Length: 520
Image (cartoon, rainbow, N blue to C red; front, side):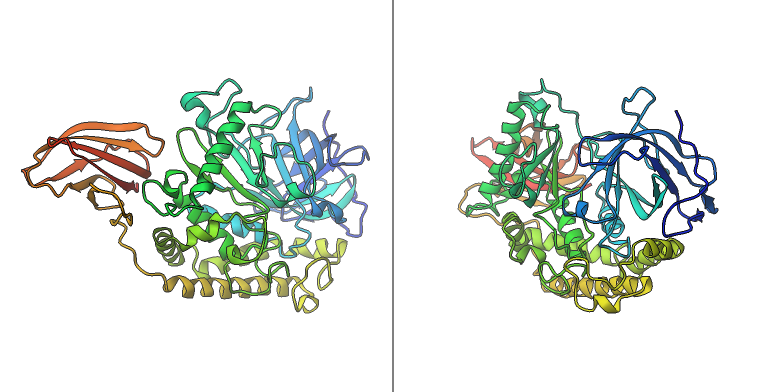
């Protein structure tokens, strides 16, 4: 059964056409609730670079969905956010490509009720993707529900383990030993575990998303809890900065740097402790992200003094922010790598020109639709929740967009100044102490080769083993030098970026250890 198209929309707005995609949903007037999903029909109209009329044929999608309310506090507003699944005629999940996004069956319609620009979430995802992380793709659209015009929504991919989204190893219930149990996992840190019972709660405000709570094996829960707990425990010890025994054993530091950059660039009041996602792939370390939930960022909330463009969010009082974020930032190697990544990105993709261009391109595209949205939902200059000073003067869409641009520019300039003070750290230095027989390794980070100096001139040959951060040996060979104890080693091209450990066994029966980072 297909959805019959509408001829007239019953609302405050005479909605006939849009330059945006039009999504029309019909539940036959069944009320949409927060579980279970209700069956509905959905059609999507979109012709690129053309005007779309509500009387046009559904040319993107025309079929069944199952839909429910989503969110926590956002459910309390008149304009509701939704989760929906695309389904076939028999009610089974159906993977489809919507508006050019990769095929899947799980989708979200963000209402963006508090963010009157409809840009903060897309901007955060643009930043994260520019940094090299996977992030949910999205499209602005206008929605009609049961014949009522609902305004501008953001159709966005749900965070999910799949080859078309977060491409992690599939974890089956029988994968409970050896390498198979090591990934993949997706979990979230959220303060909402304090307020209500959430399936998959594994302590420390962590919630499992993949595998699903009703599918995950007890051994898998124990594994990921212990792995994450071990990381947190190390961060509370004096060894947390040790290059071998510290945090680098457990985390993909580059993903944590990218997460911190995105959250801090947006000065997200919900950062780290409310929608803080993490994932772990098979035989890999924990990665931070994907990023999520930025409608109250960039000066759009008084929470944590959100109107202020200064201060690091991880330093602000919040019982739900894991303590390791501040300790990571204060660790010299991590902080210096953060500085280098930030300064590199500010040259181009995160420059003020690029950020303003992204904001302006969204605002220009939404200019026609925003007039209809704010006729249906007259929220410009109106107090909704946690409004920052001057909200009453931001009574037009243009003023809201200009406020976002000005705030973002000031925030990034503050970060520029703060990170310019960070001291240079020679990354070839292991910054470890109280251990004997530490190898001098350079260049570090390395890509194609690495030079090892044992400091023993008489050493001509030795056995060398390279281990990844899980303790799995990835390279084993005999090495030789001219008798000065210095060895040049070609790095196996199949090794991916990350932290590795070296064990050298010399003829003198002394062993030497060291660590280095591969950057591809």
